[in-house]
Image 1 (cartoon, rainbow, N blue to C red):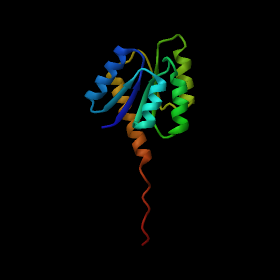
Image 2 (image 1 turned 180 degrees about the vertical axis):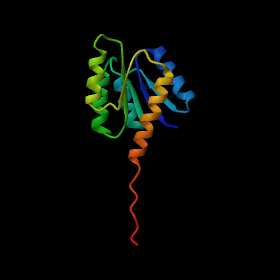
Image 3 (image 1 turned 135 degrees about the horizontal axis):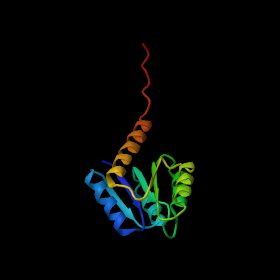
Image 4 (image 1 turned 90 degrees about the vertical axis):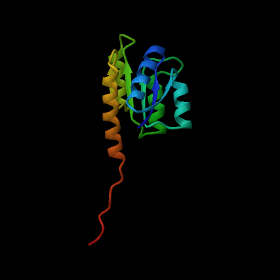
Length: 135
């Protein structure tokens, strides 16, 4: 079970994503604001962040940059589709460190699978190396 921060200003989509991720066994902290998300993350870091790139008060790109600077190891999944420039935003997000990107609309099942893959990769890379004992 992972703690996930979900950022999207679309109330219905945010609720649907949160419900699907909870059903998959995760703890979900939903918010509509990038600025609020960073505040929440600083107070209680999540295992991964899922962010829409076009949100008010602090867009997902700025949120991604802030999280990468302050918490370089946190995996971020970026999503977009609300604009005709969605593919450009998603490419930029990848360049800035988003582990995965999603074009809206997508199924909650697809997101759950991507979260599973990202967390497995992230957890695997965070395991300490075992030192071999001298013979």
